[in-house]
Image (cartoon, rainbow, N blue to C red; front, side, top):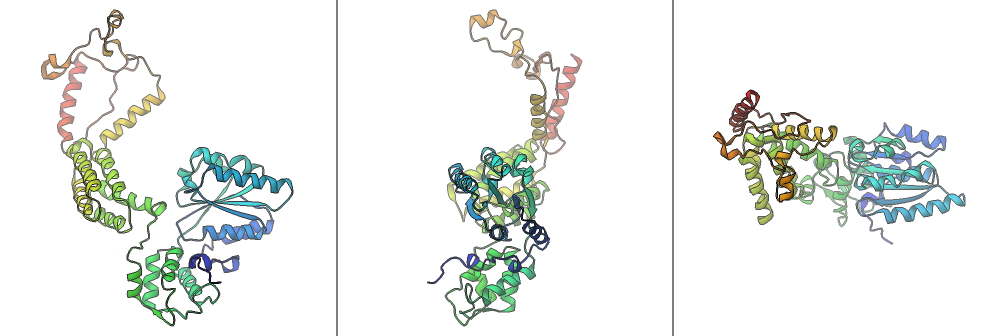
Length: 423
């Protein structure tokens, strides 16, 4: 019967001697197998670099049962069922159960915690894969019980070997199709894949109906129009949005447009980009240009109303405007200072003069007494009023920059604060 599984699955190696790439990892894996002591592992790296394959090979070398789940579409129920199976196997001294969790960063803290006792008592050997930095995406207790292994993007020579093997393999690849690829086509495919073997093999798979055929660069371009090195659920996604935001912050509209185009071509949700622009407008521009948040919010509304492809024009306008605006993170820094006080100081009682006396009883308890209504004073500023809890004293969190409109705010606040100091 014809195997209709994807090419990437069909040509997956089942032994270390056939595993291509990650040479810095293989000696460590050999030692684990040689010592006959399975270890729980976290595989961290970009997509298509061999994480799933290596997990399967390790399990096979220990003659263990291999169970695979994706954290994207699985939950505690599925994990519990596998744990129960593992406990039965342990009770009857059967083979070790290896549980492979793909994209484990999608599990929340509670879900990640559920693995801990079963790793510790040897019920399961956990091998988890993540495209995100484990330091930020995984809980510390889980990291302490696993060895983190960093996978690198595959080198060009590794991708070349993988492509050649897939074309030559008569059992699982295209050896019987007599498919070939010309030099320009091979170079283009390798560059397009940027270290991700799955991209190369998926594009090759689209030529499965061809026989006695040489694949050309132009044919690959046609097949790969919508295929870019960008994983919306993984590290490429976060690397690209990071470069985008840093380009905006660095006031480089051209680089920001490049990353915008890269995200849009890769199929990123334009609403995600628009939301990030709204955040950026307050975090990195703030009161240096108060219009920034209005532009960003209007852009988000336009994107939601219009949709792609035309909404890309709205995004482009917002991106160039925000990148070209004066920058200030004073509001963001001020919030962090205030939050730090909330975390580290007692929650002192609200001053009585700031409380609203909505009943006679509240008035009897001096709610609102001595409050001075700002609009009754010159410049609408009552310099005698104090607003912080008395135990804290006065605090200054917001220190405006001298950028754009914030310079006027800086001068105004400076004048008001001087009046308070004299009072």
